[in-house]
Length: 230
Ligand code: ADP
Ligand code: ADP
Image 1 (cartoon, helix red, strand yellow):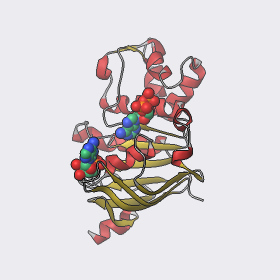
Image 2 (tube, rainbow, N blue to C red; image 1 turned 120 degrees about the vertical axis):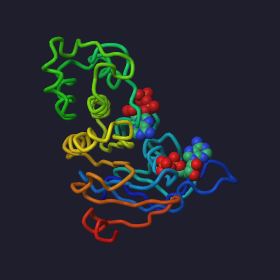
Image 3 (tube, protein in one colour; image 1 turned 180 degrees about the horizontal axis):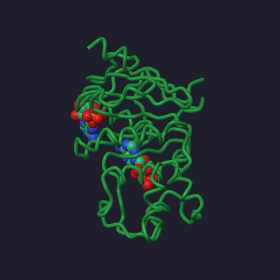
């Protein structure tokens, strides 16, 4: 069975609102990275918020590891699904404290393991103060890519089976984007991952791509298949 199985998912923000998701079918087999691509308003963030259990479906189903998503207690779901939002929070504190938000009291060894997974360990090890390095609000002193990888390390520390990356390059300058996408794709290789993004750029290595618009899946395929259809 795929890790994530979405069938005929429908979501709307009010009884008179149009469907933000209007019958979406999507699967994430174990260890795959699946991208959801589409213009603003297509329903991508809504999909992320259902997977992260910020919203319940209004129709259809989402199952994770064979269990319906609504059957996971709120305090257990974060160990199953976690993510990196568009604009990750960074607190004006040490890197250690920023990482421990995900797992209070976690020993340094676990923090380093998460940093390695997120491809951030070398940079932190090269800092004179290592985990004791102070970072400013909004990650002052960190590059945009490092902020994304710090948030990814946090998501990984929560020990999820499924990662949701919500437009990880939305706030980065175009020159940095390709490298950040490549780093993130390396880092999430072993996870079942949903990557939300605007366009097909940098998605050659993704296992499958869904193109969404107005709450529906328009096309589905590999990067090569979709690039050819363009
Ligand atoms: P995307 O992430 O692809 O830009 P969204 O999931 O944010 O798309 O939005 C899908 C649709 O749902 C849009 O029509 C949007 O206006 C609507 N929508 C999103 N969030 C809300 C909300 N909190 N309240 C009402 N409508 C919303
Ligand atoms: P926390 O668990 O830190 O109290 P939340 O419950 O708001 O915070 O978020 C849970 C996890 O989901 C966090 O790792 C957060 O960074 C991530 N997250 C929040 N919003 C999004 C989003 N739109 N897309 C992806 N990940 C998100």
